[in-house]
Image (tube, rainbow, N blue to C red; front, side, top):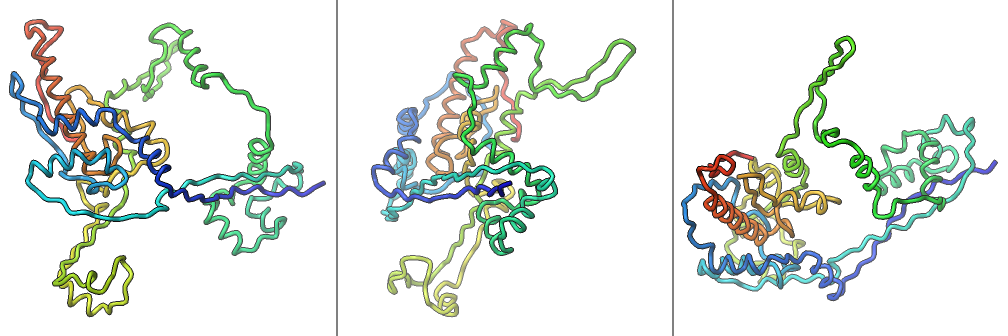
Length: 364
């Protein structure tokens, strides 16, 4: 019988700091409607045939100022508002040629024999210690680097099975065009109305030869609520120092590391303020910073209107997290509202099938 070796995932970090790579990455975030939003910022929406009351809920100016990676394609809205406000701009120069990091996942695997009677009592941690002869320090280091601590206490045979199933070049099959075609085909074969999606059963009662099931109809805002609740916000902290002189320029301090005594810094900067955006009751975070899959799952959902409710903010438009994006989303929401008003005015108010909508407001 041979002793198996546990395959570990190794992460190799490859820095690609070329301008060509940066440009290609930026193109992924270009908004095809951006030019239209710029024209709206320049010319305005114009008057509507009927006045409507609109309530805007949320804090203003959410996002980060003038993003350098998107300077050429996604700051013109900010500049247009700055120009109309009569404000001046100064150059902010920050350069880091290694700001883009590509993580390459390299998988190493090995085969092993399943000896149930011998390994059934092992946890993954027990196997690595007793068979792999890993020290306690090596176990801790491996668990922290690979985020494997929770899996240490699971059965080793489960880990072994997963390794054999996934990493031994097995022959799998796939449905051409995506696995979702299978449930879609099954759904198409059923009578209309057979499947009620997003309708959880709340109560099941049995009466003789029949069963009564009480279920909840789908909430029209459920997908929006899921997106708003799940989108990740970065926990940003802003530190503001009010200093009596530009000592950092005089002493050539270009970063955050210096050798000035604390007493001297306190004397030069007598006033300070710290703002923890994660503790702000209205934002509960600094800015939207998507986690994996949220671009696909939530980016489009967040910007879509829901009936008479329109959503705006730096988290509702790509790229998230910038003041310019927040401005763009507000212009887009204003445009959508105006178009909705125009469509409502073209309908016959006497037709009960097409009533003129009445605006209502709710906090989200």
